[in-house]
Image 1: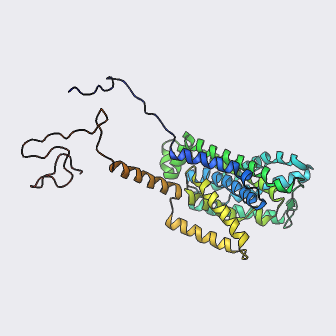
Image 2: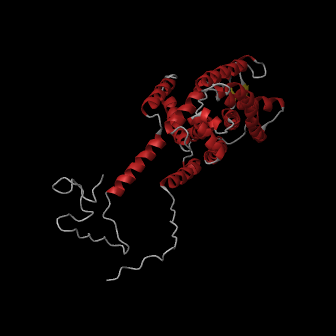
Image 3: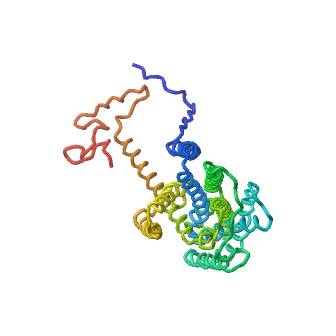
Length: 380
């Protein structure tokens, strides 16, 4: 019998790429968050949804710098509070009222980015552990300024202009505005990770001295990522101020903000694209529900700190990397347990006859012959 004709020699067959599980899951997630306020219209769920989208954007912004560079920042509340206070002060001094106050949100991001330049030039001159201490010190400087400067209203804070929107749909515009910022931050994170700039950031994370020796301008790369992260966080602060309708120093410059975004990124997967998104969607609604149902105002803070310790100890790589590793192991195990290899015609290949006194090649799976010599097809 003549074998079935195979493909012509030299003919190249390109594999057909199908959407992976990750792409399908991302599409389902995006669809779910887009239709969420249309399906669930209660004021409390949509308020939680707004907070969740704001923290998704903030966690992704934090990850763009800290996750990719390895420099853990505990001072991003500086950008969040600066964006919130700028919108409040500008609305008062420029007499901005009504819906036109939303035009101040891009300026809030710009102001936060301008603050990030001197902040980064000072803090990024030191290495990772000292950098954490410097960011905490700068944070407390800004918090004390907010408490004591007259322009910030002191401990009273600043109130936002009144919005005459229907209470039933008050949360919806803020939800979609926060969703736009969150999706934009996620797309930007994806672009950065796949770019030469992202490769340089990860090289700094792995070995900064070696990256510098290979020609990476480490200070410029770190500062650029720090400013990008600050701009996005300032946008979040501006939206949050208009949504809450007030900003006071202890909430505008809140140390729990830094703890929250860091925990979200660590839980989902530090340095990944979707890790901060998953972490924020898990933790922020959970924290909001716990606060609503608990009479102890400090319970959520206690749980937050304990959860951070547990994640660092038992899940340091995060949900996304662990899930990817488990999925690869499952696929490899499934491939090993499949049936025999198929021949060119699609059927199982017949066993090759062995020579006299020897087992057929490919049949051995154990110790081989009685003398202990492994067969030709045994797994080594």
